[in-house]
Amino acid sequence: MSPKRGVAPLRRAEIVRATIRCLARDGYSGLTMKKVAREARVSQGILHYYYADKRAILVAALETVTADLDRRVALAQARGGRGARARLLALVGACMRLAVEERAFWIVFVEFWGEMMHDRRLREINAVLYARMRRQIGAVVAHGIRAGVFRRVDVLRAAAVILAVVDGISLQLTFDPAAFRVGDATRFCGDAVLRYLAKEAS
Amino acid sequence: MSPKRGVAPLRRAEIVRATIRCLARDGYSGLTMKKVAREARVSQGILHYYYADKRAILVAALETVTADLDRRVALAQARGGRGARARLLALVGACMRLAVEERAFWIVFVEFWGEMMHDRRLREINAVLYARMRRQIGAVVAHGIRAGVFRRVDVLRAAAVILAVVDGISLQLTFDPAAFRVGDATRFCGDAVLRYLAKEAS
Image 1: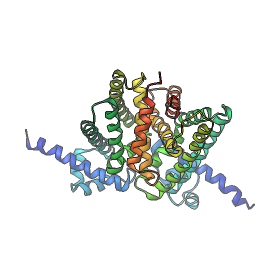
Image 2: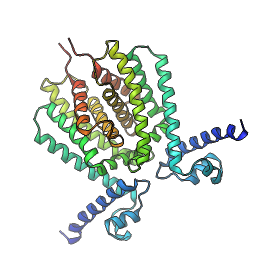
Image 3: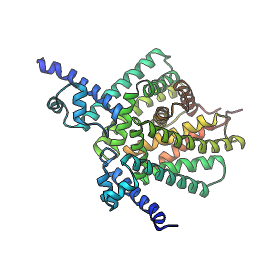
């Protein structure tokens, strides 16, 4: 492996981390290549060598925070019970804690939503990401149906609803921390998701 | 009433409509006072007389789209049944249709979310708006509990969950129209909300 191939991933990771700090402070509307270069302690020439523009760094930042969220969900699920209910609650809890405890990471998702609204390519990237998340959540729902703890539902539509609850409540938590605490929100979202999937009384 | 008082609200409304068109096209990150002035066919001097900066126009745009959403919800509820279930389904349907049929209006909400993440005053404005929406939805939920069609729930937490489902699915609809159609999404969200509030089998 050439030295350059060894250094590039580290340099890219540093630039992405610096971008995430800039986004949390100034938002995407206030993000400039100059600010990212300064925050990452690289020249603008080096920065442009790795990323063509701020949009390219936003995409890289989304990949980073998504990979981080995947790790958090996997860790929470590994720590908890192996049943479908426990795995679903672990997923809900891990997502909500990200929004509150790693606010800068959550901001990347929200800024991406704003930018994609007028950028088809960003919408396509987000559509791929959400399709994958719906499949992941859907696999847990399908597991619960097979185990007889959830009712028979359209798995991908159910996953869309669960993802919506998690996104929507995470959003409310971030601008309105006085409304409810993260532990409370995790409980009532978990309860909402389990009631939604509960089997009808037979 | 002086002529100025008569003209100012019209002029403001024109500026806000122009801003909404600019936001839909370029996003908040691409919004400039110059572009708004051109789109609204006013001088930059006139624009600055009404609004200090683009942040002030974003706040005015949020007020406009919120008032429009209120009218849509009231109209949908007036057209449908008077029971709590029908009123809740009318609300869910009206919100989802806004995201798809008045995409430019929905974009204002999403852009506002991005900007508020690093702007405390915008978060406070959104917190007031969401507290009001939770009270409105909560009133319908309370009505259903009194009428015996919904289970006894914490009304504001239930309203937060319902609002989350609507926001989250609206968001998924806007970047991933291939995943499901608005009519389908309205049905499965309505179903999710009613199941969540359904009384336990006694």
